[in-house]
Length: 312
Image (tube, rainbow, N blue to C red):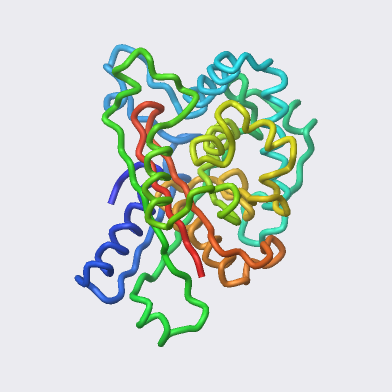
């Protein structure tokens, strides 16, 4: 399957649907990417596919840098303050990744490290961007009655939402670029299936698509973890830290794993799976009941997004 950054969660969703429909009893979902085999130092963007052939291709750091400048403008928020908030997100994720033996980057960083790092695409610096990595992950999906015969700590899939836009953001001049509608709709589907009405209070941990720090900030608001324009207040309060009210990216996120596109979604599912089992090691949350994964990819305004929720 191919669905940009949501590819592997799309495969996982189809595996779940196949089992739920009774077509198959046991399905293996796999995701893999070898980005280090291509000649690029970042994610490759196919100019012919994504542009008219006249305008230049806009690589991901530039896309999300534009989202950051728009966010600051839209909410009349000083850019230096926004950069500090984004730096706190990077520091949080590195602190979590430093505890994780599977993470690629296992070093804690400081606010100064982030704020003084080289600029990649203003206002985003080196530590605002995820790395480029190879990676793979797999999951086995089956019915609960079969799972019970295999092990006593299996994890349940509670809900899955998936949304793909029709390129509205590229076609409409009123697209605000301070929220991603695909995330909102995919989350709504998953919440309805699970019965979640207050995500901040009911979800214990979330693995979200932090390809850039600004993306994570926007995701807080799109998933209903924070009111519009006020996620920065939750960041300041430590709400999304490992011991906060709702731990976000307790394994270090894309920030510390890099983003092997076809593998990231299942890697995130793996972390939630281990958390639900109580086997996540140093980054384990105490007695979690619901965990969420989120992937979004493509271009702002032309995204594909998946949200999945897991429980015991």
